[in-house]
Image (cartoon, rainbow, N blue to C red; front, side, top):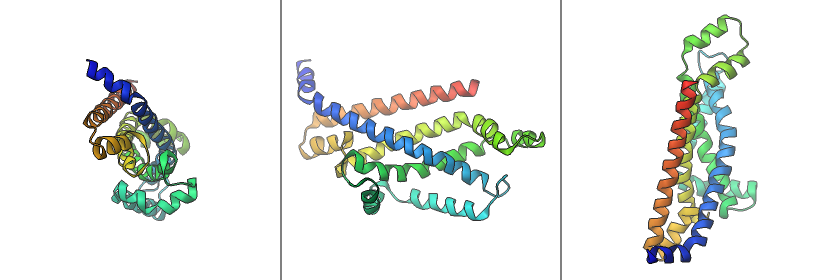
Length: 223
């Protein structure tokens, strides 16, 4: 017990700072990724062949863009867009410097999850509302998005967990957070206790997010 108390006395400030930085990276990146990813996912669903806003050019262009970005591992993408990151936020290090690559990495992923969720909606329901003369914008908002809410929540849960993993990788290149803590202290300085603590915190964080997402999705499914 005394060793645990001693560990927290020595490392509480460092670990606390790393947790805050991780929450900052995940929170800010997720916010912008949702702002980009959900409309993008909706766009590729509505413009695909047979849909209400069918447009072959837009569908193929954005579908190809999403596939290309998702093909690049995050750690490579992080270095590849360094000039773009520098242009947007003025730095490539710290929490601020990793937001851009995290958004570029996560937004297409959310768009693809969004597409999958919307395509699960029963086409018969959409056709029934269309036949009743309901305007397309109302069908999109009150039928497509409403019916897909549980799947959207589960998709965002998966994206958030993936984003946490990306922030851990970003920590290896000076972004801060739990990844940086594990790399600098747990790996380079052989502080095994710090590594164990980091892994434990990440497990608790991921399990909590998954549980909250599952419960929220189940609640929406019953409504």
